[in-house]
Length: 112
Image (cartoon, rainbow, N blue to C red):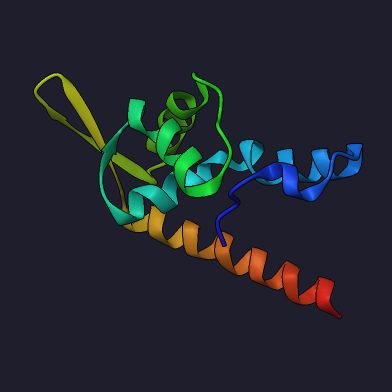
């Protein structure tokens, strides 16, 4: 389920913290999900996250997250002229799957 508008969840401080912690504070999950579908360049990530997931990360955030993901071996890059495209690695796919399982587990716990 893509979040079309975060405003649908209310504006209490607790909900705002929950949304921030699970969106912009965990931007790496959303970046890896996008890269798992197709390679892309850093500048496009901010708009793709907004279009797909309904929140807009900070301008520098996508670059910082890509740098850290690359440093940790979850993404790799390839120069194509003046543009650097990023793609997910095998370990990136594995960590994304682990994150998905974590969230599924949390949902199961909260349903009990």
